Length: 580
Image (cartoon, rainbow, N blue to C red; front, side, top):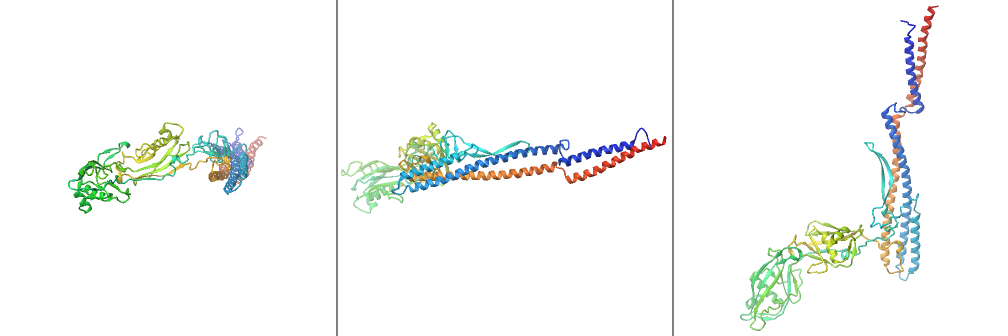
């Protein structure tokens, strides 16, 4: 059907021409921009991802710039620190030379002063963009002040929830600062030296006990004739721990212990009843003990030292009691007027040595007051019997809690005993300066409430491995060294300089490792940016081969559409010919 009102063929051709024209414009845009997705209308999801990644790439680029700045700061600090290491090494060599007999120390001191000035010059020059990590300005000494840190930008990250953050590399300036305004730099003295820790430093205390025993001076000789005798009583393995908070054990009492001519002759294999010396009296006393069933010895066992010509005797510790002791009392005697009443060849007299209540103990003579700084600690190991080793730590807080103070100062042995008693609480030990046996001396004992036994049955213990942290306190700074005075010995100066050198080397190691990390992070950031660019390109870049081929096809389709439209329009002209 042919109509002069509606040219269907022309409408179809026109619609095709419009469609081809739109696609042609899109292809031309892709070719001219190189992008398959240029706006959100092209593909909202991919456009959003690509735009976000391009923004992140810009942030990573900024991080890379910051890493470059940080690397420069690290390089300057490392160079300065490495130079300080050289200066300290030279300083130590000069101190070694100062030990020579007859050396002119004043001349050496001049060289040391120049080296110190060189070190300060290096510290001041180690600045980049106004930042100097080798000279800090904390107003409080590092050992008493708060943390002093700085940081370098490390990376830019986006979490799976879309949250962004900038991570940083922390730098502890206390470990790399050479000079600090308030003190504490590597080249400056430290505070709070513990010295010999009141005499406790390097202690190696091993405590055990042996049988309770005592010794008396022999006051013989004596001869037993007729009805002559000595009678007395003994209490064995009694113990009184009430002084240390422990139990009271009365022990076992033996009465009617008797020495007479029959006992003497039986013990000595004689017939005259005479006791000539302490050795014979010990044999006689042993027989008297045996006859009365007293669990005691008179012959000195292995591990004991005989007190000369003494009447020594001790507990055999065969009773189930806690104690390890022996005491003789209630002496009566009859020697027909030859000796006074109560005479017992010295047994009746006060003992020359009396070791009852034999509890393991270890003592330390307190030397001098000291102060524990906020950064210092004392540690030592405690072991009881064959139990596990327990680590004990003493801090400034321990001192203040024990003494009710705030300065961490231990003034005397009573203070130190209170501090250590708090520190060892729960380990099974007690510490005191009020020990009746060692008054005014720091004494460790096994806690009798936990370990009530005495003598060989008692718990043995050790207090060892006493250390301080830091292990050494530097008592002088580089600028304070003066070999012309006697404030410190050359050896002390050398030890201190070696301590500085170790800390400076450790600082250089820290800076070197940080510099290596920053280089690696910068390289990673560069590669990450390339990866992000590549990833974004995969999402939105146009395939130019495909786009150019498509453009050519669309141009051909456009020409065909135009020709179709011309043909459709020519049909109306043919109809006009019919009316002529």
